[in-house]
Structure formats: C-alpha cells, structure tokens
Image (cartoon, rainbow, N blue to C red):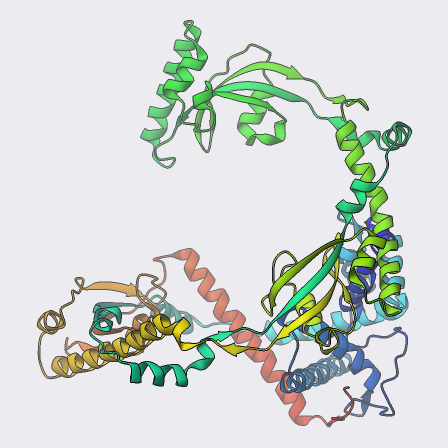
Length: 637
C-alpha cells in the first residue's frame, strides 16, 4: 500500500494535494495538534469552552477541510450556506470539547491496549489488511501530523466514546413500550380508494392564446436555455502517453524478469455440463424430482448417449446448452464452490455423479486440464508491453502535468501551441452548461473551474483539472452565453401541456372534494365512485410502508382517525403526480409482535437507537446549558 501511494505521489503528482487533504480529514481529530501553523489574521481565539481556548487557526483548518468536502459533492456554497456551516462547525467543536472535559472529569480513560487496537484498526495504516508501523508513520508524516499528538488525540477520542456509550447504554425499552411500538408500526388499515388522474380531466381544459401567453409570462423560469459556454479544450491522458512510448525487446525482457510472479497462469479446466434445474429449492418433492431426472440423464450417458445431444435436450443452463454443455476453459474461482470442488477433483474423461448447487443438479464431464504454469515472455508479451507502457507513462504523466501547470502560471494563452508541445488531444464543446458536457463530463471541480470569473473572462487558459486519476484537461472559454428565455413559439406545445395538466389536477382535486362532501353526507362509496367515472378495488389491508399505495394516499390513510362504530372515515387527497384520490378508512388493525420476527428485531433496534441518540443529545444540551461558551464570530475566514 505504501509503495502504491508513493508511486501515485511520484507519478501522478496532480493527485498529491487531494490525497493529503483526504489524509488530513482522516487523521485530524478535534484538536488537530501537530499541523503546521497557518495564520488567518490577528484573531487569537475562535472558541472558548469553560475557559479552554480553541484557536482560530484550528477552526480555520477544520473549516477549509469542511468547505472543500462539501463543495466537492454539492458545488460552490452561497454566503448563507457558508455561514450556516461555519456555525455548525463551531457547535460541533463546542460539543466535542464539553464531552471531552466531562469524560476526563468523570475518569473515563482509554487503556494503552485500547489505543493500540484503534491504531491497528485504522485502514490507512494497513497493508493487505494488517497494521504496518512504517506505513502509519509515513502517512502521518505526509499529513504533517506528529505521531505522539495523534495518539494523544485518539486516546481522548476513545475516552469520549466511553462516556457516550455509558450515557446511551443506560436506555432500554420496557415491554409495554415494545407492545406499543409493534401496535403502531405493524398496524394495518383496511382501505378503499379511487384515483382521479389529472390527465382524465386535462383534455377538456380550454386553452386560448391569452391563457397561453399568461402562463408563459408567469413561468418563464421553466423555459430557459441554460447558461453555457463554447469551450476549447485540450486533455492529457495516461493512455496517450503510454501509446507514444518506444518499447524495445530488451526493455520488455528486463521488465518480465523483474515481474515474473505476475505472469503465472492458474490451473484451468475445460468441461461440459448438463444442468437439471430446481423448480422450487425449498420444496423436497421438487428436489427429489430434479435429482431423479439428473440420475436418469447420467444413466443415459453411461449407456453411451452423446453428451452434447443430451445437454441440448435437457440442460437448463442458457449459456451452455446450445453449445452442447460446453463451458470452455476456466479457473476454479469461476465456479460456485460445490461445482468447483467436484470438477477440480475429477480425472480427464470422467463423468460425475449429480452435483447439487443453488442452481440445481449438474452432471459434469472433464475434457482437458491445463496445469498451472508460468507464461513465457512470448505468451505474455501483450500484457507485459501494456503494463510496461503504463508504468513508464505514470511517472511521465506527473512530470508533464507539472510542466503544463508552470506554463499556465507563466501566462500561456495559445491552446493549440500548448497541445502541440505537450502532446494533448484537442476538441471543442459548443454548449458546455453547468450540468457539464461530453466528452469532458460533469465533475464539480470542472464545472466550478469553467464557470469561474477567471475562466469566463476568456483572457487565459484555465486548468488543469483532473477528470480522472489518469486524465487531466485545460481549457479556454471562447464564448459565454447567459441564460435566456426560450421563445414562446419554441415551447408552445410544452406550455399548453403544462396548462392542461395544472388545470386538470385542480379539476381532479375539486371532483375529489365534491365526492368527499357526498360521502360525508351519507352516499355510498361505490355510488360516488361511479359518478366520478372511475373504479375502486375491493377493500384491502395495507401496512405503513406498503408500496402498492401512492405515498400521499398512504400518509393520509395513516394520519386519519380510526373509524368509530364501524363508520368509515373519508378523505380527499391530492396525489404526487398531480391527480387526486378519494379514500375510505374502513377499519384499523393494531399490529402485534411475531408476524415478522426479523422486522420486529429491526424495529426494536431502530427505536433503541433513536432513544439512545436522544439521550446523548439531551446530555450534551445539558452540558451546553450549564457551560460557559464564548464564540468569536469573526474567527472563520
């Protein structure tokens, strides 16, 4: 793992900053001790908690990490969003500090053994799943974190976890609480409902030019050409570098000698099979019938019948039946365990007894065996050459990216000249929007770079931007097109459809409301549904999460009161697709435990988790209520 990371940092240097940022997120616990000091101005504190100071530098480092993380996933933040996230970050630091202070006061301590287990369980410190002290030290050093400080932070973090666990484990559910949970969550409601789709009423909606123009003027935001740019770009890929590398026989021979272990081919076997499928794996009779059929086929084979002919006649394997059961050459790992074990225990020419897997019963014939062997240079030459080219290209890629970056910093403005000098592939995207554009894609980093003020000015080449681990691009904005409203003539059909859908939905809801009045006035559900010209299914019981019901109908049904004296409760509701529904709640059947034991276990775990989280939240709130917390609103930049 360390070698892999080292190779990436040397050969793909544009990744170094990203990797170190991720390492900082992994290793920087709340104190973030040991990181090189960064100055963010004259403010000397960011937060004070019961007299303990958290510096502005510490908060700003955490804020830069948080901001980068959020913007990578969600795009550039507005000022309002930044303020909210900064406030959230300060609150988190205050809560963490209060918990640590209380943990230390109450004597919670992590033992050396517990700290050691935590360190050795950190995936970033492992090679092939095992802790490696050399890797751990190297990773901490790359992140700029002092090892002793990191261990001290982990010890404090574990102490806080002990306190939190102590608070949460004191919570439990009583039998009466569980009974109530099962009654509510496993509850079923007997319902009838009829749907009134908007489209049923839309065709009758009158539409004229006046209405069309009014809708268009009121909904212009729905009919916009998006902001876009005409983009000239040039990209560098690892494959393009690799393809240009000159390769000699001596180079490949040296590479082969150094990496012979890569070119060992495992034992492979060539086999045929006939699969007799199980109609129902849980049915003993179906199993017995399949086995009997498989034995009959086996008997026919032993009597001299042609294997391929029987495979085409009986085999249920669609991938091989037409080929007479031929499975070709494959390693043991290609097959499910019972099949693989049987095949790789057979002798050439042998036909097996029926072998059972989850797919059914197999009769297998082993045709040929190709033992494990080391491939010669000649046999593996295509693979060796591809790997040699890519390895050589990796280091060249990073160097070329650095040189390209330097050119851009020195003000390079001729994209064609740059492409020629660095072997870049050029292209143009006529309409690159904030949703991206092929072939560059839609990575948030790319979109932010393209629509940055610097790039939109068109004065210089922007980038490079990493599109993938082995692909970067530079670009120049040639034209910038602000969002514009599409002409009415272009969207007239869409406008008419929107008007009809909107008014159809309202008509459907009005019809449902009128139907509700009739139902509450004593009319029968069937007679009301008939006047609406729709149909309703017979009464049926539905659970809270039943996907058969439209979400709005389900939510309304379970929010309605239970019927009294067998008198249905009626509701009219707008549906999510713009239509409406008329609903009758006929009965409520409280749930019980035992109908679905696995679901009951999940419910109990869910409620205990919720209650424990609430307990810890209340505990923290009480710590905050009795604490002295002072925030410096100007600490975060």
